[in-house]
Image 1: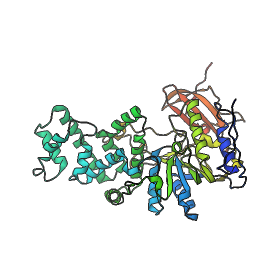
Image 2 (image 1 turned 30 degrees about the vertical axis):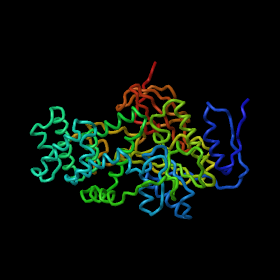
Image 3 (image 1 turned 120 degrees about the horizontal axis):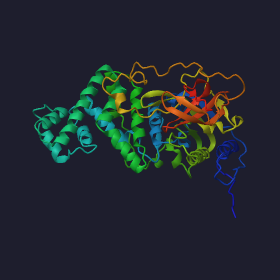
Image 4 (image 1 turned 180 degrees about the horizontal axis):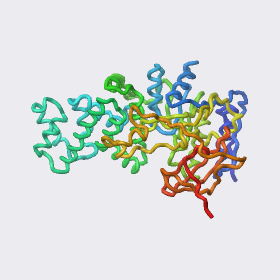
Length: 475
């Protein structure tokens, strides 16, 4: 016998109506509809915001109206998303606490990346040097570091010069000398990039060539962590500062001067807005909840491909929505910084599953001409994309002079009420090769959106009439 616990004592009826709309699409669950005797309350609000910075500012505007910081929580899918909110709230003087994770700049991988940057601008920074010189392992342990420091006088305190001198005089074996040569070349190129003000490329070059990205990618695969996502957010933050040497130095100086840490306090004991992943909220409740990052490839995540994966993500969204007692805000950005470049985003499919009459909607997902034919989350740029003198950087949207968007004209014209693409249609893309349409549906704005599974493994979502693909006729 199954006993359904359907009465909810936390949330108002309008919030539960949205929650029920979210979860009812899941097939692998016992049918259940939550209800409450708290029938009064405002409808949840859905904001379509311009970009991730606008997302933060909308949250801050609402928080400032009544300053009920302790009663409010910002819920996101991954811890990497906390950075924008930590930065924005700190700048506005709004107290906050990060639950279930260290504050962004106290995370191991972020500290490692910043050590590279600090060493670039201060080659006498021994703390940063010791932190990164043997990470990943290069055969430079504590005794080897002391051998390097023995050249302090000759090198006039310049740690990279000490490293070069130690390598030249064959203090180390061939493999370690090769690794040292790579590090020195990386810092030389980074110094050049700093002079021309290409800070995103500078940061990516150091992360790649000094081995941190590969190191943390391997750790993520082995341990199921998300450290590379935090490095991506650091690159995004650097992409938003003034792209000059002065802007770079100011950014790092502010970090050094304004390192707020939790010391020995349990963050749950502190006052302020709660920043927390959706996965960590079960059993918690807040008067006001902001669920952010509601876009395809952010939530659901880009690795959620199977039906089971999507249903699990939908359950997470349901749990997030039902953490709200009185106010629920859903936010979806049209653009988001991904690996230092701007990507046009599609709203999360989960928003399509909610009857819009249950929501107060502010803005629209496509209130301007679409600027790209397809919307896929960029993978991390390949090593060759950051190669010195690489000619494809501007084409990919990198560098300070790159334009993030290219206007697309309609490639496919609808002559009747029939869809432009049907499920099963074979298609060809110059970028991804051949594939097959696996879903096709009409959005509330009238646009047909299709999903294509390419045979090489890539999956992409397109607005059909702008899709840069060709149909393959089969007979």
